[in-house]
Length: 486
Ligand SMILES: *[C@@H]1O[C@H](CO)[C@@H](O)[C@H](O)[C@H]1NC(C)=O
Ligand SMILES: *[C@@H]1O[C@H](CO)[C@@H](O)[C@H](O)[C@H]1NC(C)=O
Ligand SMILES: *[C@@H]1O[C@H](CO)[C@@H](O)[C@H](O)[C@H]1NC(C)=O
Ligand SMILES: *[C@@H]1O[C@H](CO)[C@@H](O)[C@H](O)[C@H]1NC(C)=O
Picture 1 (cartoon, rainbow, N blue to C red):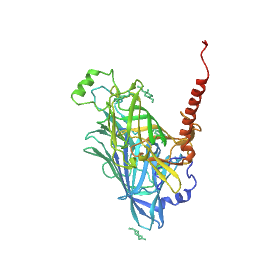
Picture 2 (cartoon, rainbow, N blue to C red):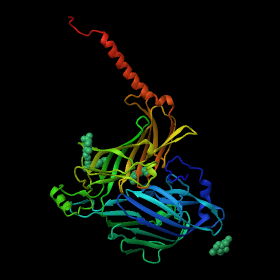
Picture 3 (spheres, protein in one colour):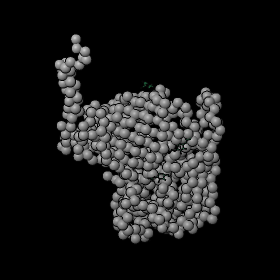
Picture 4 (cartoon, rainbow, N blue to C red):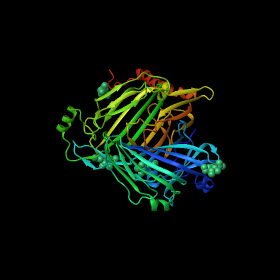
C-alpha cells in the first residue's frame, strides 16, 4: 500500500542521507508547471514536474516545499501523469538550516540516462487564504487574499518554470508583480480572465536551499472574489460505537463550526437578511445551512444544538447497501441552524446517525476476525477540520484488536469504556488528526475477535439482573413488610 502522507517527525532522519548526497546530479527538471486552484478554506495545488534523468538507475526523486508552504500543506500525493495509482512518498521533517520540507518519491522503475517521466504532485493547502478586507457589512461581497511563493523549489536544476493561479470566480481583483525577479526574460505576471500566470522563468539553478531562498524567492499575492461561505470546523469529536448486540454502528459527532469569512461589520439585521432571502441573493459570507453526505442505510439521524433538538433539518435517506462507505450512493442530511451563521461567528452542534452494522462490517472465517470500516470524517463542502478526535468503541470482550488508518494520525491511544450493563468494559481507540480536507475521506479499519463467551456476556448480565429481581420478588412475597400487624 502506498504511504500517502507521513508527517511524523521521528521518521527516517538518517535513512535517506545516502540518496540525498547524489541528488542534485541525478535529475534535471525540463519543466515545472504549477496550477493553484484558489478556494475558501482549501486551496488545491497541482504541480507537474517533467523530469529527465542524468544518471542511470535514478529512482528516488525529491520534491521540496518551502517552510511556510509545507506548514500549510495538509495532503500530498504523487502520481505519474495519466496514472491513477499513487506512488510511495516519504515525508521528512523540516530542515531548519535550508528552510525546506523534503518528500522522497519512489518512481515505479529506475530511469536510464536521458530517460524522462512526468510526475504530478497534488497537494491541498489549508488556512492559506484570508478574507481581505477582514470585515464586511451584511450586504457586501467577500474577497479573499492568497499569498504564496514565486519559485517552486527543487534540489535539481530547472530549465523552465511557471505558476498559474486560478480564481473560482471570473474576477481577480488584484495581483502583485514582484520586482527584481531573476531568471525572467519575459513579463513576470500576466493576467488573463480568472488566471494570473507568473513566469516563465528559465535556467533556474538548484533552489531547495537557504541561499537561493534568501536571494531569489519572492512573494505572490492574489486577491479575488469568492462567492461561497468559508466554513471551518474548529473541532470535531466523533464517537463510533460498534454494537454486535444491536447489529448497529452509531456515529455521533460534536462539532464547533466557525464561519471564517469576513467578520460582520455592525449589528446583524434580520430585516436585511429576510430581504436577501426573499430575493434569493444571500451575501456570499453568510452560511445558512450545511449539507452532509451520510452513508446509505443511515437512519435515526439526530441534530441538536445548545438549546436542544433543532427541527429544521431535512433527511433524504438512501437504502442500505453492503460496503456502504465504498458505494457511490449516499443519504443527504441538511442541517439548518436556528440563525444564519455570519462571518466570524461560531456554532456548536451535535449530529449523528445509526446504520446497520452489516453495511460496514465483514467476517473472515479463516482468521475468525471481524473487520469494520469507520469513516474518518464527514466532509462539509470546502471546509477544513482544524482538530479532530475520532474514537472507535468496540464490542465488549473484543480481543486481538488491530487498527489501520488511511492517514497516519498525529497520535492515538487505547482506553476502556464502561457503559450500562457492561461487565469488563469495551476496548476503545482514539485518533487525533489536524487539518482534515476533502481528500481525507478514507475509512479507519478495525479488526478484532469476539469470543462466544463475550457474545453471551450481555444476555448473561441481563439474565442475572432479571433473576435477581425475580428472586427478590419471590422472597418478598414470603416476608411480611407491614408495620402494623393485624
Ligand atoms: C494545521 O494547520 C495549522 C495552521 O496552518 C498549523 O499551524 C498546524 O501545524 C497544522 N497541523 C499539522 C499537523 O500539520
Ligand atoms: C543525453 O542527451 C544529451 C543531450 O540531448 C546527449 O548529448 C547525450 O549524448 C545523451 N546521453 C545518452 C547516454 O544518450
Ligand atoms: C427532533 O425534531 C425532529 C423534526 O425534525 C422530530 O422528528 C424529532 O422527533 C425530534 N426529536 C426529539 C427528541 O424531540
Ligand atoms: C469562535 O471560537 C474561537 C475558538 O474556537 C474563538 O477564538 C473566537 O473568539 C470565537 N468567536 C466568537 C465570535 O465567539
